[in-house]
Image (cartoon, rainbow, N blue to C red; front, side, top):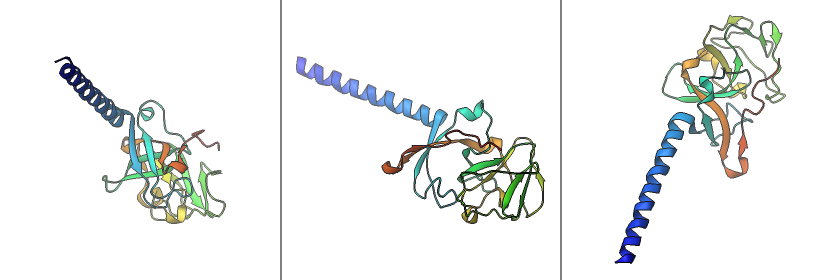
Length: 188
């Protein structure tokens, strides 16, 4: 009789533990972080195709986005795909692409995260040599691998309300585990 009672208690404890664990996981997933897989090479070499990352959702509620941060957001046109890009232009700034470089408020933007051979070309939205003022509540985002990236140059600025979080860490594959957005902003 005592043995049956212990087995029932152990089973009840296990079920309770699973319910608590599932609840905590769901709360963290919904409120704090989200798991994503990188698809494509637009952020190469910073992020690689098929790497698994964690997006941190909480800090964007109280800490403004900074230039140089890698963020996750809903595609401005389809609203159904999550994208990962780097913040380059901030609200209220003037941005221009000219001679392969990005200029913010007339000053060439230093982008130490880019490979040395990367050239930034203007396209549909951010045409070569044309200055664009970024509206309040919007950001210009670009991929690090500019020749392979569809980004704000094509579909325009990203609205702050569509940003779901900052890239926090790569957790898979195991040999690529690392923190992302270290140092966060890029000095001008």
